[in-house]
Length: 258
Image (cartoon, rainbow, N blue to C red):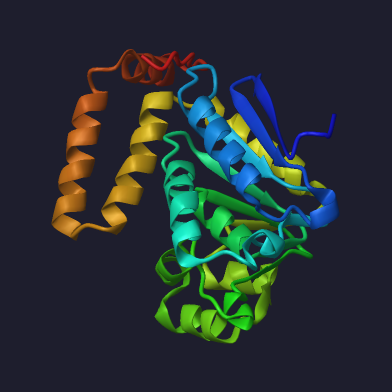
């Protein structure tokens, strides 16, 4: 039996771990990988025991793009019927915070996959890019939309039109990466941050994520209205009472997600 191309580890203290596991193909995203990512992220997103998710690859590659061998002879209708665009939406729709732990290459679909996450922890040697134009296509997993939202029009144009790669430091300077750490510490740092988030009230964490993501595509007034409704709703939660009581009593809170 062949080893699984995506490995999922269920929760340790509220943290789930998903690992892309195609080392011989630099973790290229074939259809099987995409389906498994959508499956595990949906499953973990619905699991109340999981409060934060880490998505990673290996030390050589987070994901070095789509599997070109799987697409080279495909036509338009076949690509439509594969429904990969639906899988991308499913991956991006996970309600729990997702941290990408990026070592090595995050190119094409790999860069797009990282951009569906909420936090990106990158190793010093990580390399990003959207090189699709070099093989006659364009980014198809959100790269033309998420990249300019993250780094601005002119930086996005510069890299999407040339297909050039950029370093972790350049990604950090542009606002694409949340934090850079030594290559050997990428996964451990991502897991530590996930544990930090998992100790916080789940309802508030999910509302933070939803307000930020929905607000990005809304007017300021609409975003502020969404935020107001979210905070008003949280005042009905047990975790709000626990958090405020613990603060006043100078003790560590115990949040239940209720």
